Image 1 (cartoon, rainbow, N blue to C red):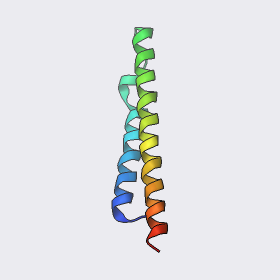
Image 2: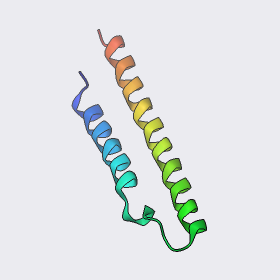
Image 3: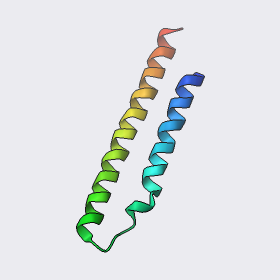
Image 4: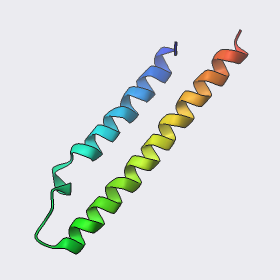
Length: 68
């Protein structure tokens, strides 16, 4: 469906999401405030990565439609 460059970008972004969601630094620490900060930071990174993933896919779809 997508060209090789788009597939590579999508795969990288998916790996980034997996890294954030499985990062051991998000295991609850003794300090609840630190744990909360880490969770919020992780959620923000997930959202920004998902947004980048969405933009990459949208651009690929537009390029695919215009190249026909």
